Amino acid sequence: MVRSCPRLRRIALAVGLLLTVSACGGGGSGGGGTPTPAPTPTPTPVTPLIQTLNNQPPSVGDLAILLTDGSVLIQAAAVSPPSASAGAGIFYRLTPDASGDYENGTWTRISSPPTGYAPYAGATAVLPDGRVLFVGGEYNQNNYNIPFAPSALTNMSAIWDPRTDAWTMIAPPAGQAYIGDVASLILPDGRFVYGTKLDKLMFALDPATLTWSAFPAAGKADNFAEEGLTLLPSGAILAVDMANRPHAEHYVPSLGQWVSDGSTPSDLTSPTDYPSGITYGPAPAQTVGGVTYGPGPTGTYMPPGEIGPAILRPDGTVFATGSAAAGGTGHTAIYTPGATITAAGTWVAGPDFPRGEDAGDSSAALLPSGNVLVAGVTSALYEFDGSTLSQTVSATATSSGAPPVFLLPLPAGQTLVLVAGVGVRLYTPSGSAKAAWAPTIATFPATVTRGATYTVSGTQFNGLSQAASYGDELNSSTNFPLVRITNSASGHVVYARTHDHSTMAVATGAATVSTKFDVPAGTETGASTLVVVANGVASAGAGVTVN
Image 1 (cartoon, rainbow, N blue to C red):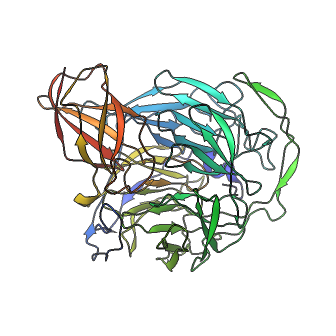
Image 2 (tube, rainbow, N blue to C red; image 1 turned 30 degrees about the vertical axis):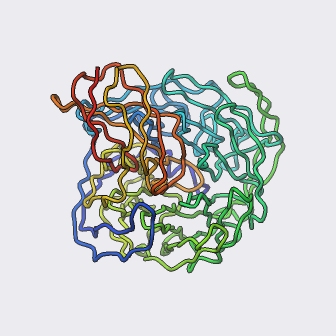
Image 3 (tube, helix red, strand yellow; image 1 turned 180 degrees about the vertical axis):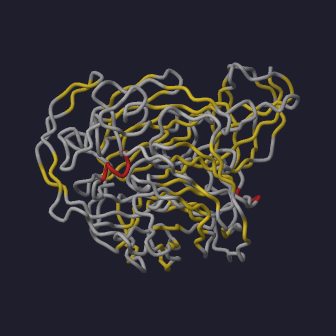
């Protein structure tokens, strides 16, 4: 995430930003439940709708996380010094209204992490049990200095439990004095894994014990600094290298081995803004939430530049976006995995961004249609339909420059759009998912009781993709099932909190998967319809009676 004046662009509370709709290209593309390459249809001109939420939180940062009960957690604006409503240690939760709409949802403030941990630009993940994990942070304690302050690249981590609104601090992996912003994801077996920023090591967190273990990672071509990780249908993990540009590689967890994927057709990285490096440390010894961290030595971090987000599409390809030098042209590339998990994948060039635009250190989300929505560094939005990259939303520059835009897929098929320091909006795309992409319900309880827990099983409960990407930080993957219950008489909607998913893999095809769900105590009784939602795509309804 390091750029020239890196925090000024993100911390400034921009005013007057106006998002306007322009002509766009749309149309769905992709394959079926088990992704196979398919021809892309000719795009049909469409006009998406972007609207401002009627209710706004007190402060808007650039991180949003979808929770397993359908609510959304956002981080307040990262400001120094923090205020009563803004700062990296402040979070707000959006709950949709009785109709399941987010436009008129309500905001509540949750508790803050223990004093001493206010992370910004770290790794985040929703665990299979529904808790939210925060790992590291490029910045901490609302200190955004370059060179890094001693609190930066923190090795602190924490779990937030939505059921109790409580935080639990986590000790770092042994010997890791610094973590910072790291490449990370949830493995299919539910463990969280990250690659170290300063070298080539990998560590995995057991969500049950909250303990770290070294993860074998032979053959990595470079360190993980500024790289993103994309989970593939095979369970392999794709990374486009930053220091070893323009090389790409994928990791096979079962073998603990990285495999070369050759080079991307064009360089997807921008040059570093700090060729002489950035000093960090010494990290002080401090106890936060009952866990002791530090001390850590001083050092110099050599930032490799930036890259854009990468999104797995329903046809099994990965759309990877690029960064560029200021005023340059951002490139994209399309990756197709090899025939086996150990075979090298192949790359072809994708469409370029308009000159002066790129997706470096930006956000992307998968739409139900299979298109990829990407935020450019100018804060304009673009859709990629499999062949064409079309601008759908333009942005007016402000006196403080273009603020960051963060994109999060929602279960209703819309995308939440955070404009840091400005407001929260909804992007309603055109197009729809193919029937073969939807989850299917095989077994479910015909009668449920409020406050009780049940199991539902079927196929494709985790969707066909992680569906959201920012790169090496601010992760917001949505590859987990949500359960939505709609009362037949009133039409009112509730989301039942899901947990203990049988897998966190993507594009699981015909394999049977399952999740548990808790029926909310306030659910209306009577005849209802239950659906499973993944990546904003809902299954066919199953009739249930709520007692």
